[in-house]
Image (cartoon, rainbow, N blue to C red; front, side, top):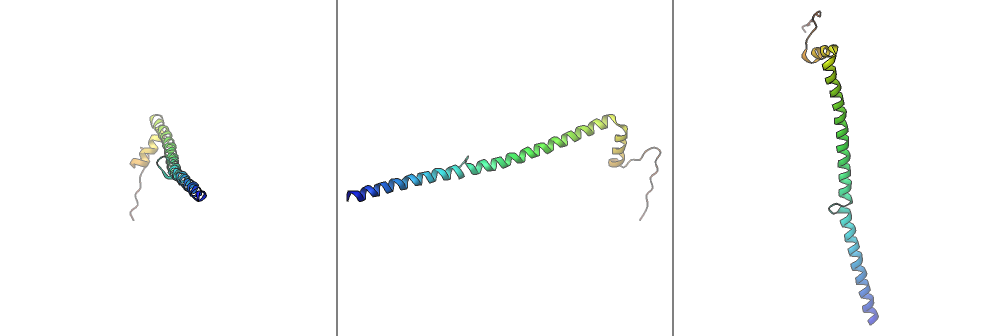
Length: 98
């Protein structure tokens, strides 16, 4: 009979050990700061990096436009015509009624 109790005892120990290992593994995967959380944060970081890159590109374009507005009279005229609907001194505007 001693053999049965010893065998049951070792089975219980093995069961407790595997349960603990499984719990630790689940916590490492799904717990706070686990692999799933790390993957989500990595994806979020990639989105932020892409947004920063696009914002930097937009800023470079705006800086170029500012420089052109400071120095290039033809660009100023183009913007005035396009955005403000203005016409040049020697230009005539024809409006055709429908």
